[in-house]
Length: 390
Image 1 (cartoon, rainbow, N blue to C red):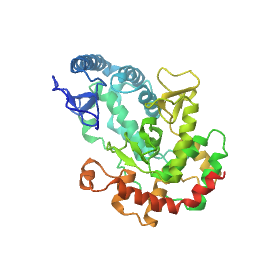
Image 2: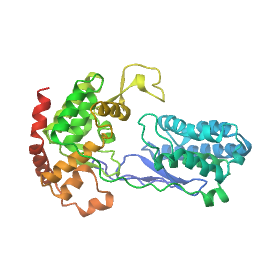
Image 3: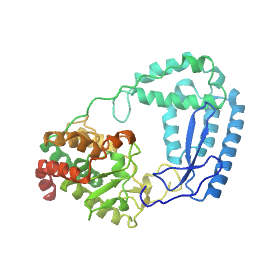
Image 4: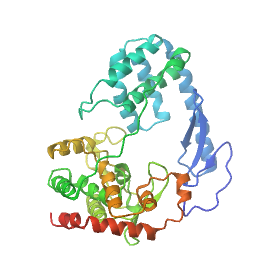
């Protein structure tokens, strides 16, 4: 990471990561998996104390949890959520409780943990994969079922029961990577933007739509943008927390910059004024976990949540219920392909390279990306002119 000089040697299994200013350490779980922990500290002595305290609390929680082998599923789950903050954020725990509900209902909250067999887990898999999601009406995916059973596995594992037949015979569903998504044409893009801009509470999503159409970024990457990541005078935006862990610079088109500037205006109105504030602050009345539950207003130190359900609702109104927000990213790539943008430049812009791949494309400079952006900008000039007049 730029700006970090030579750093001191670290004791006791602590180590630095070049992309972070903080000290890290690793430990092995009861299932022999390695876990990486960020101490969020820069002082070696404080980080070492943090590691010792962390592992002690983890060990005590594990010892107490093994006493629940004869407990009911509900009791074990409640104990699990008490223990979980050691390794997970409040937001993650909130989501996991919701995810685990189908398992709890199907197996029965009063079922003894020891009575959960491989046949019951298979019955659950068969039943669950045939269900449909209440919010979207779409079939439950293999990934969802696997995540639900994964939580059950964690509970059984920490109770010392995930072994023998359970461990040997359990097979998660195969998860097939989805094919290339849909792409919207120019008229469809204008229709989507106009609809969202005229819909109450969806203006920030409309601006985010413009950002994705003008950069090819993922939804989460847009939601995680901070004010310090926007470099308007230099003509690029820094994506610091991407899916593939590889930071990158992206060059927005005119439409993308329009969306970013609108989000900055909205963010400032919501209290985002400091460099480390998020461009899309969290609406506190929607906070699902943590210290902000029950408050009103906005918290610029936390980014807003997903708009997947609202997006589905509005796309259904437009007659395209299966068009996902992520498909805007595919739309950007399609426009690039039709405009003749070279593959390497497109991969660099949308973040399709992992750390090893990026080493093979170090010759891609911002100049190449600027040319690619210009081509896409020409392609979507009609949309940019349209949104300015809305």
